[in-house]
Image (cartoon, rainbow over the protein chains, first blue to last red):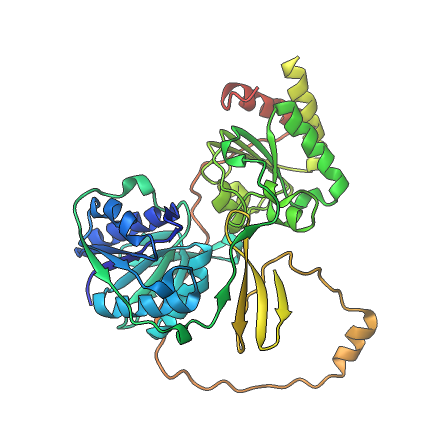
Length: 323
Length: 110
């Protein structure tokens, strides 16, 4: 058992960009351990995407292909990756913490009598893997204590895709043994409920509202502030779950990922799922009544107070300074 | 997000990233995790709470683990702050004036 293997994610021939963050994590872990990093791509378009990986500093690039892997199923991916991990025999298997990875990776780890160390935010000497507990209020250090391969998924935005090192790698084909009977779930075509008309990722200024707003009719005060600033209005998940704003305005892991010049968070506590969607913002201003809210961990400027007093005052001040 | 019983198993609606959804059919037994927003919370009535008190509570003994744990938890601690947060204080009007200052000269949003 030796080396690090990164399992990359793609759909219809397009990378999930978080894969390169996992790749950066894999290369850095391999360097720390004095070992080599390899990567694997699964599915139909693996060949086309392998060329890009062949120009990275990797020992090997595995393309995992089989007619039964054309569409994603947890059964198919678990069976195929189980065979690949058995053959490649890595000490560490790294994955991006995407929705798809959450779906199949725990089952894959279980096949090796391991657990997935999920949503890791840092890797220290040891290696020690850091995860967040209680919505980011606490951190916890975990160490692998078994003889099998160690499975780790990394949180979005923790490692930087730009730090992936270039080099040369050999591409190797891997054909898993799969039978149709092994694939128990039947996936339908992915679909969207409404046409996405708002592209928050391109907005330079975003004013975002969270559960602290209390009632749907109160959203108007935040809307007025957004209008005064010429900013797009966004929201955290509970607001969209309640139907107070359309889902397309949701920022976070299940919504859009944004990195505006200004992210003004109003009444947002800052659950991890929300933070991963906005922590790349240049300047973050947070207004919240709870001084211990995790949103203040990522804020440049913080105001602890009653949003119903501060937001109207801010709207007034913004309008006054513009006129 | 939705769970439907079909003849031989389940049909579920899964949420993918970026506003995408997908239906998946599967045989039973199946393990599901439920996303928020799929159901409205149902609060217990006073009668229900009273009735619950009279229900029998079953205790099940867990069998000892067959294998040693695959990972160990070494330390739990408060996260180190990654960003320096400047807290702005004062009356709402004072805070608003300080924020406008930042928005004008640092963020250049005004």
